[in-house]
Length: 334
Ligand SMILES: [Zn+2]
Image (cartoon, rainbow, N blue to C red):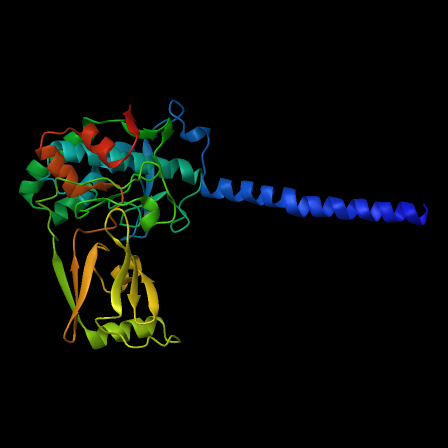
């Protein structure tokens, strides 16, 4: 091989490497991350889904995993997540949401469990969905509740048996819900990471009866500063007062996206967590030596508002109306 040939060969190798690095590698990486972030497969398609007879549930109290008949588990979730005094149509909406969420967890986990509880796809507290077994309910509820509330919940689940939510023919994977929104729900990406097409900000008109309207939380200015300092010990906060504690941006649903505190810009969600606020839908003011938060609603504000669902049911809407209102573009199929 002569020198020119070697040179040409080296040039060709460099070209191939550049082509790989610039064109193929990013494509391969994007494809890989796409698959990681947006998992979708034939197993989630309508018509291919089989509801299993049993579901494994990790019980935090005992540390054990129990195999529970699937529809009995859904009943225990509705009992754990919604008051039985709510309207039947609201309970039915909750039943379909709980069933859909549980099934998507089973399908996603395949033969394994959840990374946080590897023995089961779901657990029994707010990490997944709150589940109460009939034995738990007998302990924590009254005899009257067992006679009236429990049959109502069973009826809500039985009358929607096997019904699931789909978006464009694929099982809905994140049918999120919360207690009350404060009047408008949130786009999923304004609270969590992913923008999901069925988790859009919508009006939640029928929440007048919900608790936690205009709730006030007072914190002394010095305690407020101290908590922020503890979280950001290396930052010079500058002066923290009524002029430098300000909401900067709100989401479509009204929650605080970002807020100024001294020299820092913080997320509304972080403020909610740090100060134990019921909602990131808040206003803030400084009055003398006190920081005053006024919050509206309870929970993250994404998906179905349970109090809004109950209000819709009282206004004559049925569970399909409720679900299609709070989950944009979904359909309910058996
Ligand atoms: Zn869990």
